[in-house]
Length: 107
Image (cartoon, rainbow, N blue to C red; front, top):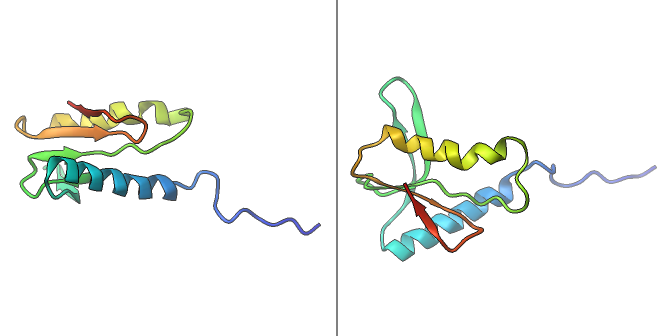
């Protein structure tokens, strides 16, 4: 029995992470701004990790690149990402671009 193991575990999210980089780059180009991965302190010892943000934090972005039917906790991913918005300055634009749609959602 010489069965080969799969090269990548089925739950590996490497492909989605790579797609998120492309989504952020395309959105930055569309908006004519530089978006970089950012970590923002919450003030209570925690941090919020964002897929992209402008240097002045006027635009905050969480990319969503999952393909196919959602399973398990994935149903709550977009809602959880949107909740991150509640901790930021009201003047910031919070965007959640999706690889499944040409639309860009803004909270």
